[in-house]
Length: 308
Image (cartoon, rainbow, N blue to C red):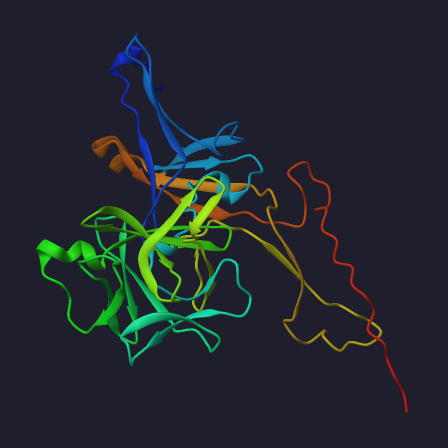
């Protein structure tokens, strides 16, 4: 007969669950602590679990029907100032002009011809970026009117601010702010259609608009790393035409289907370290947790069979 051991709540040690498959995919976990000394980790998706058992030094937890993304913290998206990207630029108030490099004057001009490609390179451990056109640095002149020019060499550290820009991007519009000897200025065109750090907007009064339409050559946002999805797919089964019956052509991609998950972790390692690396098994079946048929609609338009 097993003996019963009594302990105070403060003597109980919480176990932190972790999931590490390709990298440290973060579980949606919060730490709770009470004045009486009782503390525990709460992981979303494991609330209202159906069953738990310990067998051969492994702990198994059967969850309720949940979406896989409920368990993890979404990585969100990376924006232009966080990943290398290539874009073309167009003045906000124009549908025909673009921004193009003029090698004769070594300036960026407003032109009717095709746009130059601007490569955006984020600077590590900062919120700034550097711009490249034709593989050369975009740099601001030291003196007014702060004309933009290209240079194959980077500036010295003490004046590196002349090739560093703060990028703001929203709703397809982008702006670039840089530090000059007269303070911070935005990149814009002036009266001679040359791009300089002279952009000014006072509320509704536009002196030199510094907003540009931004058209990506590469994706401007991306979902990085681990994407916690558990989609169901269905395939064709057409008795009449049988055109797709022997292929793996997907008929429907069904997202966010609640599924029971089986989570397990080694007990001994969890007790010793206070952390447990979990495994997650997908228990997808054709029936719901209550025993009924899964509500999956696999209908499709019948393919027309033609005869000569």
